[in-house]
Image (cartoon, rainbow, N blue to C red; front, side):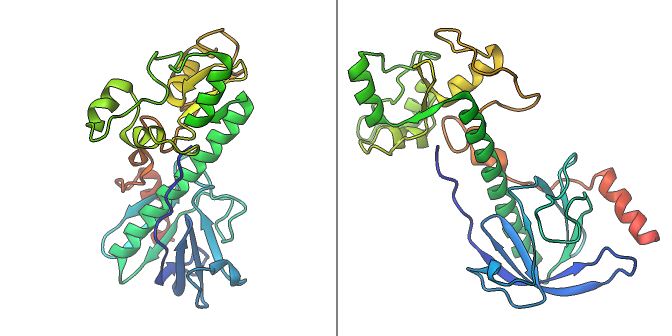
Length: 282
C-alpha cells in the first residue's frame, strides 16, 4: 500500500463565526497539520498544536467534508451530505451537520491549505477502510522479493490470475513508462516501484488471498465487486458486498489517482443556502 503524502503544515489567524443565539465573529489562531484543523484563542505551536489543551479541532479523516467559497473572503466548511462531524472532534458542532463559517485576510492561502488537508484526510480515511476490508478478507500485501521467493518454493506463476499480465512487470532502462503502463494496466508510479529490486519497493501493489493466489490489488478489487469470489478457485471472498463504492479502495496503488480524492469547490447547495438564509433571518 503506497504511502499517503502529508501536506505542508500551515498556521495563521482566522475569524470564526459563532453559531449560538448571539452570532459574532471571533479571532482565532489556527494550525492545519496532518489532515486536522486546530484553532484556539491561544497561540498554537505549528508542530505540536495538540499540546495546547484549550483548543478546538476537526479531524478530516473522520468526516468527509466540502469546502464552499462564498463572496469575499468567507469560507464555508460542512460535512458532505449524509455525514456529521465526528463526535470525537473537539468543537461545539461535533455530532451535528452544522457548517463552520470562516474568514481570513489570507483567504486564498487558507482555501488552498484546507483543500490539501481535506484531501489528505480523505486519503487517510480510504486507506483505513482499505486495511479494514483487506483484513476482513484475509489479504496479504506482497512485494517483488517476497513474491519471487514464494513462487520459487511453490513453482507458481508470476502473472496476475485475473488479468494474466505480469504481477511486477520488468522495465528496461529508459523505457517509456506510459507505454508499459498502458499495456500492463499498472500505473507508472507502480511500475517505478515494482520494477526495483528492494524488498519494500512495490509493496502493496500485489496481494495474496487466503486461498494462496496472487493478484494486482485493483484487478482483484474489480473482480470481487462483480463476482464476490476468487477468480481462480471461486472461494467466497466476502460474505456481503458494500452497498456503495469499491470493496478495496486503492489509495496510491495500481491505476489509482490521488486526484480522485481531492476536495473541490462546489456550488452552494440548497441545504447550505437554506441554512445561511435561516441564520440571517433569525
